[in-house]
Image (cartoon, rainbow, N blue to C red; front, side, top):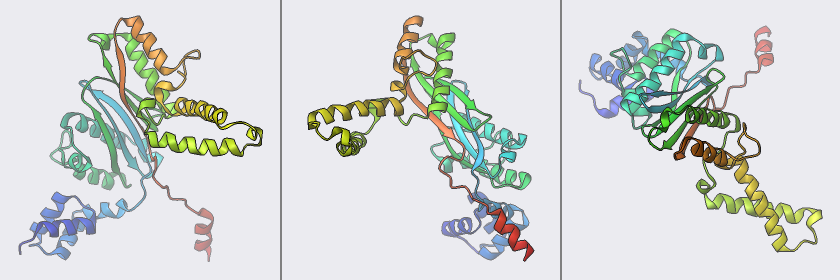
Length: 307
């Protein structure tokens, strides 16, 4: 019995199993969807899908540089305990290696890549880890910097992973001061979580909205009741400057410096090594960021057991 690409897609949606395994299951079952589901269950692949419905909000945010290619990845698991498991840690590091070597365009492409030292794809290996470790595991996101000079930083064993990408004058990548600068900036990004690299990267519409809010706040403050609009405007612009200082890396106060900005510190380091240093980009991944975690009501659970 023949089957179509739509059949493969339908089976994948039913089971959550990888595309290649769904295709193989349909081959083995002569295109019969129900038999294909049974085949996947017999092979243990559908068992992995049962776990895939559970929320994975723990895990590791990891950053590394491979042969000059900077990579940051986030791989999730259900518990912090599993996130410290050696098998899970190795899996995460190998995902970063695949990103560096294969340059996948997106998550689907990454999942179809060959897993290092195996004939399996990344997706198939992820399913293997689910079965072995016993928790839902999910590769969530990644970023890759193939040009420039990248410096990685992993905070608290994988709670936060940061990669800083710089453009340097030739020869500066070997300077200890430049490497130290990259590490300092990565640590600052981990701690201060800037939303933007520079104030020029902030969408003007965001600033206009911020100004509108601040003007209303200023006018409603009784202390400003008799102040003319031009004075309130100046006050608001001062607060916009504060917005930049809080949200833009280059305008932030350098945490290891003495009342200088990150931008000023970079200029000082560049001058000391006799070259040009430009921060072109950064990525900060925090594990579980934006994932709604399940809140277990243990009291209700225990009460239901003793009824």
